[in-house]
Image (tube, rainbow, N blue to C red; front, side, top):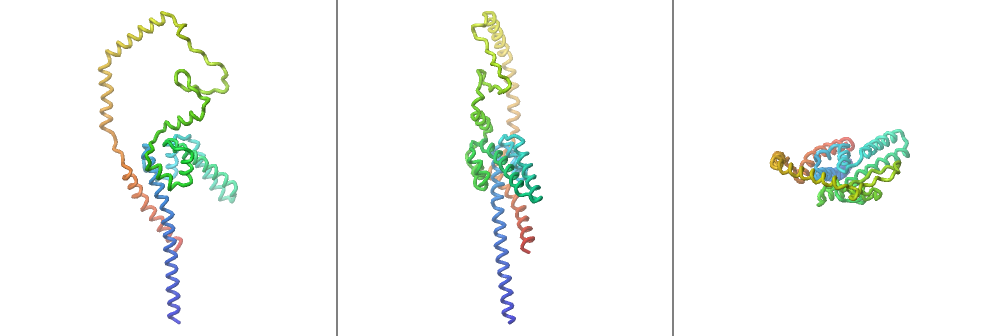
Length: 267
């Protein structure tokens, strides 16, 4: 009888140990995508000439993503405000309103990711991948051959607005819906008199003469700052160094969180 009781006790302890070990494995498995995404975002910030450690700070990471993608400030503010308001409404047991607020927050965060993907030459589909499949698409953006080109955002926005056409001076005129007056025509060459032509030629010769006399000193002044800044260029970290620093910071923190969660839930 005592042997049977002892056997049941050992079996219960063995089953409890097996269940707790499996649950600990599941906890660690859920933290692995967090490490992958954080390290990848740090590398993306490094490619965009931003500080890599900004990827490790919540909310500041999303703000940096908005700045890298040249997104308006209200994108980030709406994303944060709608998320906080949705959490507060959920506490008040209003799930329908909370769901709407969470959807608004998710839409504005996707807009931030869309502008960020445009800065690296990607499209809207890649932004959906960054949003829904972050552990896959963030490493792709971090390790591919794409370069940070913030000018691509302005080019794609201008191509999406064909009504903004450039004038003869190469500048885009501001669109004013309330100003319906016709643009003023520039004077043609036939309206310019010969006296104005002679005056312009004289001023041109004087300016060229002044540039020739001041050219040596200008060259000295232009070369001196370049030599100073070239000697003071900061050393940039490599990709391996950034990943190593991220892991060095995140792994101990996540290990402490896993241990605390295991002790609270299973013991």
